[in-house]
Amino acid sequence: MAYLDRLRTRWNRHQFGFILGLILPAVLGLAVLRGMRLASHGELGPIWMAPDLFRPMGLFWGGIAALGLAYLGLSDDDRANRQRLFFLQIVAVPVVVLEVLGHALFMSTGASLDANLLSRGILVLNNKPEILWSEARPQYLVALGGLAATAVLLPWGVAVWFRREASTDLDSTSRGSRRLLILSIAAIGSSFLPSFATGDTWFSRPTTVNVTVSFVRDLQETWVPRTPVESSARKLELTRRDDGESSRPSHVAIIVLESLRARSTTVHEPDLKTTPYLAELAESSTVAERAYTVMPHTSKALVGMLCRVEPFLATYLTVTPHHPCTVPDRYEFQTFVEPADSRLNRYLNTIYYLDRFVEKLIDQYRELGLYGETLFVIAGDHGEAFGEHGHYHHDSVIYEEGMRTLLMVHDPTEVNPEDIENNV
Image 1 (cartoon, one colour):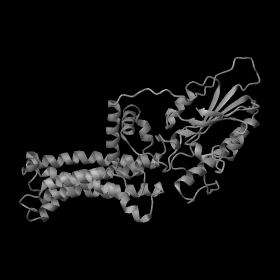
Image 2: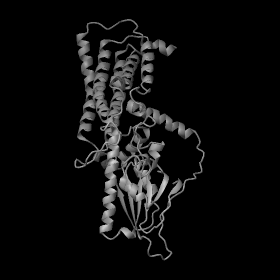
Image 3: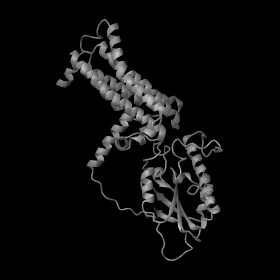
Image 4: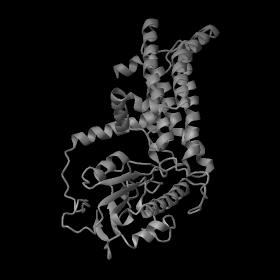
């Protein structure tokens, strides 16, 4: 209680101007970036609920402003308060930078920034900075530099202007800093709640909140001992045959289809005509009815697919279904689901485009005389989430839509291929 009693002190216009100059430009700039993400997201509920998409961000920064004012109310000493103003800047600038980085990641990959991705990014920055710089976009660098510079310079200018314009303090008596502290905690805590306009919790919350939540979650996982689970899934391994059968294929072509979830293919959903060629090819192939990726992330999935393959092989990795799911202008856009401009329909069109690519690729093997000598493995690296469990994510989706994918093996010399019913 003694600590809370110390908060019952005054704050003046100079301090209020500093907080206003620090928070307001950040909120306006980040609101513009959020609007850009909303425009690219899709499936966000009724238009009248759109303002609610800005609620978590508004509560978060409003809480930060109230917390800053309560913090300044700890003392009347000008020197101590000047130090506190510097400290608030030191805290606010990295938060602004983190929000811009979260925006850049979403616009590039469709994924939300969390503690794990942030730590991996820092590791890459230390070891291979050229990788991150290769992904830097001029507009993001301008936004990052502009917001950071504004957060450093503008608060002091506004504070000086407020001091000149104000003849007296707002109040020379107690300003109820205790209430400000309670208000700030309530506002920041409420920003952890998702928007009602979308079921995607991670998309609707500020990046700083997502990083905090994921960091706490990761800590909890390190404290709770994990119990090893025996898997009944069958492992599909490709090894060279040494039985002298020269008629067997001597080459392997592994075709990895980016973000291809099983439920979006004609092979597993006959009424959905996104992959007519693959469905035809499946009739003379071995199809894993329940194939799951080892990890819903491309680089990890590729390690699981390729690290133990022994024969001579050619590997293909497609990218068309990757966020933001675009196809070449020459492609004739289809309507697989309504509305036609929805994010899901764009994704399904990229799957249809991939189907034609696979057909042309295998036709090329025929033209080169390599078709009969090649074993074709066609697999998705992971799936994609379109709100099935409240998430719109490109990767790191642990549900069926993110884990279950297409896997089929086409052997031109196999007369009676049999499908695999159990998990693979």
